[in-house]
Image (tube, rainbow, N blue to C red):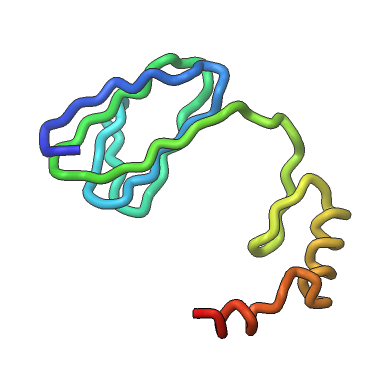
Amino acid sequence: MKAGCKLSIPVDATHNAFIYVIKGKIETEGRTEVKSNQVVLYERGKNLINIFSSGDSEILLLGGKPHNEPVFAYGPFVMNSEEEIRKCYADYRDGKMGNPELVNKSK
C-alpha cells in the first residue's frame, strides 16, 4: 500500500479474516493503529474491511470459513483434542515426524 492509500476489501461475512502487517503501519476503520509484525483479527458479520495506510506498508490479508472445531495447542502443535496433542508430541519425541538432520543436510 502506498502512503495515503485507503482500501475497502469485500469479505464474506460468515468467514474469519485477519491482516498481518509485514512492514509499515495501517489504521483500521476504528482508528486503531497496527504496526509491523502485528495482527488485527476481524469479527465475523461485516462485508467490508476498511484500512488506511499513512505511509508505505505491506500487508497480508487472510480469511476463510471457520471450522467451528475445538482447538488445542502445545508448543508448535495444534490439534482438536488434548489426546491428539499428546499423541502428536509422543510421535515427535519418538522421531516419527521425519529426521531434521536429513533435512538440514539437503541444504
